[in-house]
Image 1: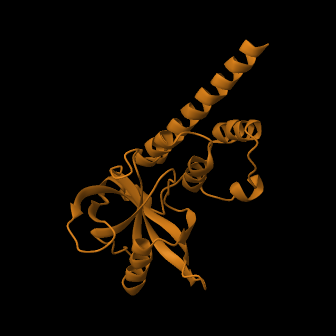
Image 2: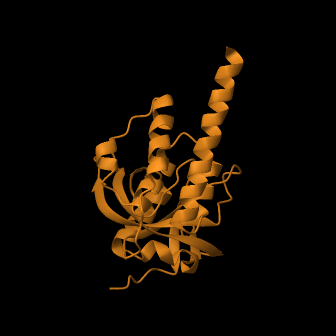
Image 3: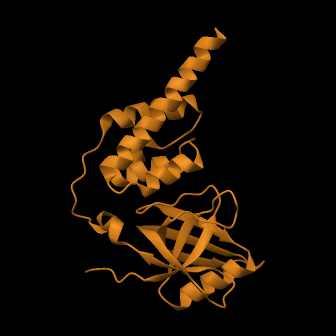
Length: 206
């Protein structure tokens, strides 16, 4: 059954957090304007968009990810604990002039229709998996690789991009890449760059 996706999306902008389709993201909501956003989403379709803030703290990138609220728990101190599952990426077309405390945007999903195609065959990139394990180990990062291997390739790339010790701009570049092949290549090139840089720095210290 084809998903009916909203053309207008309430946006939760975050600094330094990248959200991808087919991933889960827990959120601790406490700001009044975003408590209002969650309350409004819960009364409608449970869809909300996450997008990364630029350095100006007001501008946002043009590409974000639509999430659906799957858990919504209220705490005694007034916070809301939310779990989002990533649905598909979107492009911002224009901002909606509203009277709400949070921002809304008109979005398009046309560029990222592949996110909604569960039948697309995906081959696991064993070379990337091997170099990623070495990269994570060198940076002291732990990951349950046994469980990780159970994910499909798109989920694996997205998960790695979310948690890898790379810059926010590099993560955004991966997010904006249209195909799984392009996302994989960009992530692989980034890891190669950091690995080479670390090797060069180590050699210079000897």
